Length: 499
Ligand code: SF4
Ligand code: SF4
Image (tube, rainbow, N blue to C red; front, top):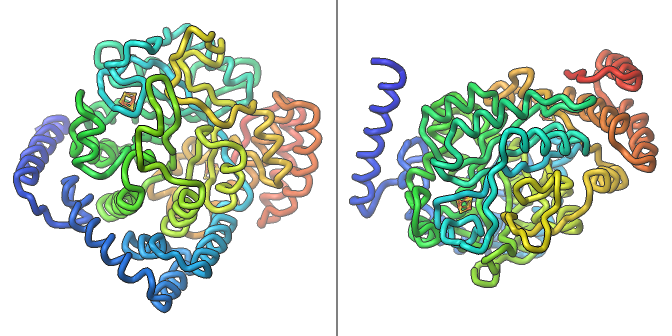
């Protein structure tokens, strides 16, 4: 039996299991199972809600959880939810303090930058919260040609970006997998002046093992897919039509991606769609499942909140969360999954981002355009191909400048993926506390590239001062010397050094 045939059989078996579970109203919780209703088990979430609420007044228990979190090995979903349910001020203060400590310990003051690239907004799904939904007749539909992608990528390279997240709607006719693969090839092939895109992360609809293999072979970085909500019934209501309606198929997508050999996957829910407590627990259970089944949890967790867009009013969804709860969720994800990168997009404004960087976020987008073709040409008032309105409208240079002002090192590093440090190879390095020895110098070197090629005068001034200071904070003497040598080479016009 060929590998493909074996995979098809496996998928067919799972489908039967899924159907069986759909008929079975009480699937059992099993974090190692490959069946969505078992690893994201509704009853387990309900019991966790009950358990957490009950224990949330027990200060001794809460302190014990915090003590465990202090060891930096994470928390399980029950422990994390109990902290979320607590309204004790001392406990809350301690959660934020600990999140800040763990963030600094594991990520230092480096912030990785990226930009989304929208390829096409054709979509056959009916997601009620997204303006790309197939029934929306007012949105301007666009799909980039390879020539247009080239122009967008040149515009992104001219801003200074090295890392992209590809976005496209689900439409087998307009955006088949071949289109995505060809686009990735185009993106990697463009080297404008000193620019290049060194890591393409991909956010496309749940697909088959076979297609995930194709994405892996095309050299993608992380495969990103937001669950939107883990609550099956609400998920089905929010996705009334199209292939995305199938909750189990969507929820098992990361398993198929990992079976296909994609080591790095990125999870997330869209906060505001459903009860945040339910989705917070589901998100952690998903991470625990991937760790239990594949030995490695998600590479990243994103925390998007619903935003206004064409045909979409966030007030139509009554589960919105305020900044306070949102911050607590971010802090708790940080202490529950201390080694998982956390991403915040330009959906959030400067002040929320500033707060989030302190308590967990390690990657942010900058200078983003959420419309199709938006980097080459901003949309006119008559056009509206954007997926959501951005709150942070600053240019990449303004974001870099702001990070420097706040003593963060803006990083354009993509080294791990290019050195084959993915999945468990990456996690082993992180868990051994060794990653900072490579992240730190790589951040400084990629910042130097940015300063030489793209930065404004003021950003150069601030950046050079920070590099001079931070190069002395590299732990190994040998790496410090090499970094100084490479920084000099970059200033002399050479590029792409990495550890
Ligand atoms: Fe399509 Fe994704 Fe928007 Fe749903 S969320 S309508 S699948 S683009
Ligand atoms: Fe990320 Fe690896 Fe670069 Fe560190 S060295 S910033 S983990 S790509």
